[in-house]
Length: 116
Picture 1 (cartoon, helix red, strand yellow):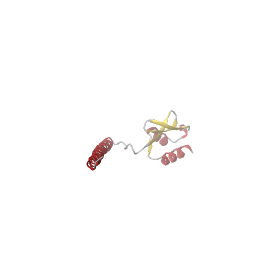
Picture 2 (picture 1 turned 45 degrees about the vertical axis):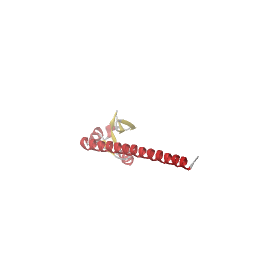
Picture 3 (picture 1 turned 30 degrees about the vertical axis):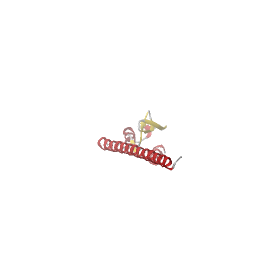
Picture 4 (picture 1 turned 90 degrees about the vertical axis):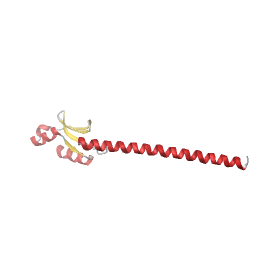
């Protein structure tokens, strides 16, 4: 192969790599912009509807089928067999409405308070 042929081949490789890199960056930026727009939409919806952001897990502790139950969203994740009739009326009312906590530690503390 001649020098000229090698130079043309090298320029072709450099050109291909450049085009590939530019295409990758355009796609990456488009993806990042799309994700940022979705995050902004979720934050805006959360603010207007007063709901927690998806990253903010909340647990609801409430009376369910005569027991104390823990829900993560709509999913039942734990149930504690207790006699709710022995609870004060105020506590039964709180559990009927539901007690929201943000961490597993808070959930464990509330369950301990009601089961001891």
